[in-house]
Length: 359
Ligand code: 2X7
Ligand code: FE2
Image 1 (cartoon, rainbow, N blue to C red):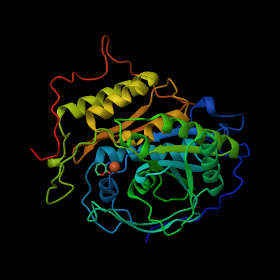
Image 2: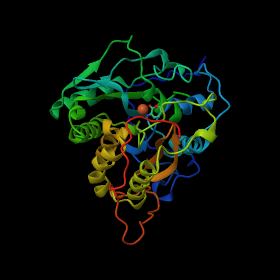
Image 3: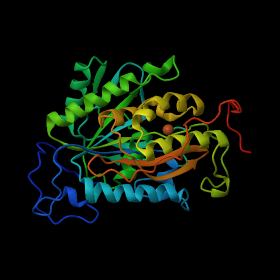
């Protein structure tokens, strides 16, 4: 069974830190006592993709199926994300927005104090049968729901303890914190805003701003996790051994190039352009960011014109996945795009496949 710590949540306003600085904390954040002096607020955001293959490949005690590994570059990217989360960000709470908790009416916030159970991934039950048991920061969850409602969003507080937690929520949270010793707030993905359109991310931006307000009101030190893959066309057949990496590659060159253009904007810190680029990327690649987790995350951070740190990129059954950190207090080094470069590969020669098929 999983190693789960039950931590208490409540008034988590931080006393000044006096402990010795952990390795990797930039000097600018160290106070006279050598501690990390960043106060409450959103201290970092991660794009944190969730394909169940990643948990399967890790062989954690919480998951029943066993593997021989696979998708290492993405898993090593998560290893670095975990290190930064523990040593640098040290959050009171991780707030996750996940596209597989789909709600047709409104944005729902999980307010159940201790969700626990077995989550069997409906499409990949041979990869993910995961026992979860974690603590919700109910005060912050309630505040996010209230701030979202105040912002005019249809909002619900989930209080039914029997509801199964989806694998996109579990995937991002496990990969960021497999010990589950940090309280959580989990948000649903409301399908309605984009159901009849290519992408309508405005509501997600409002939800992001509401999340920020709630974090500030409650004095939490929060890390946000947007649980999304990038390009999302995928194979419809699996090798006999799911982790056979000889079968893993981008779905097609177009998907890959659109993802690289998105990452080029991220690495250059051209966040305003990224905001305008997202609907194009979604249209071109059926990207999972259509569910809004990335827009929510960047909106909560105030669309900062700072580079995101792309810790890794890799494909999973052909879909594009990147682990990215945005740290406003200590932004990544910018990687400017080459002169004359413009995002958005030429659409003219883009094939429009309907279903995936292994080539
Ligand atoms: O949920 C997913 C996903 N977003 C991408 C790839 C494979 C499986 O599941
Ligand atoms: Fe997904």
